[in-house]
Image 1: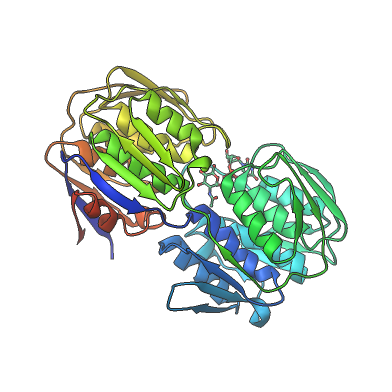
Image 2: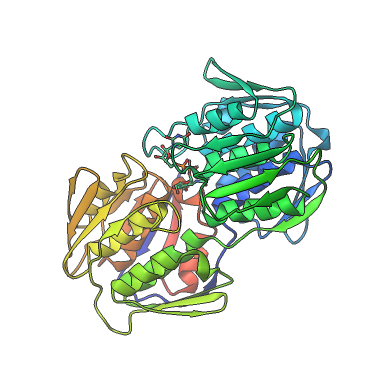
Length: 420
Ligand code: UD1
């Protein structure tokens, strides 16, 4: 059932929450469960729609899934009976493409629907295909499906044409079972790639250089049963820090990994936010100051993440001065702009840059979520706006933010969910 969030804005957020496990880490990690000869037990799994979709996908292949009382998820691939990822599930979640590498590496066959997911540009998968072909897979596109076949994958030296996160993950998961050495150049350095590599290493893979742009893998014949705890969600953490900043509040996020979002913390400081890091906790405090507009330029990690661009644009529209947000990763990732304008925001788009002129106040509005991070920006704007805002199509946010109303309420926000 479609739901909407109703938010009464204008209250400074204040309090403490804990970060959830990272959506972008848990999805490839659950799929890595296919690679083992025994169960992979994953902890700190966030309760998200995308996780449900991923488990449905693994279940549809015959994988045995168990969830214990602590919500640890165990994936036992020994019952896998189908190597097909059907359109209905892949179209719900683009990250489903990361079953391709593990399936072809372990079973020599995979049939995976071409992906859907957030409508933020065309998002091709040519680099995934190119990397798997370099490892010896034979790949055809048949009726909207990627069909990959291989006898035994062989290590290769692969040069990625561009930095791709799930592309790196797919090739890494294939290379761990390939014969001999693979070197992946221009690899993504995102913390979620490192977390996946740590999980694969726990399963017995031999990987060096994860977190740098050259990853070296010595293939092993088989991977074993293992356990892994998912890294904290840096995008979720930073979204709450933005919510603190835009409302002039003070929020601490615990159980997070501040070393994985330093570029965002630095931008928050530039925007006038007092940021304090203590071990696994981070606090954003406006200390009565006004927000300053900042210029953002998205790029692969460790630069400023595209997944935080919309939230910073929401801050810029009430900050002092003119801010420029330049999106370099995805085309068509400004769908939130027209919705933010409903709050009264002054934004114009030139090429891939959104230029905003800050206003002293925003007015509550009826807005619609268009994709995952866009919906986060609307919620942030709503928290700062005067009066009530209704955000519809909230299923986008449920794909990536665990218990968002509960966490916002814990910070003093007035928010409720209603069926539309
Ligand atoms: C991942 C994240 C997403 C984040 C994005 C960029 C997951 C599940 N999702 O998405 O939240 O916004 O990284 O940090 O981890 N490209 C190609 N060919 C390819 C692959 C990618 O041209 O084969 C292009 C894309 O169109 C895009 C850029 O490369 O312009 C980066 O995309 P990529 O890193 O692959 O994004 P995802 O892995 O899909």
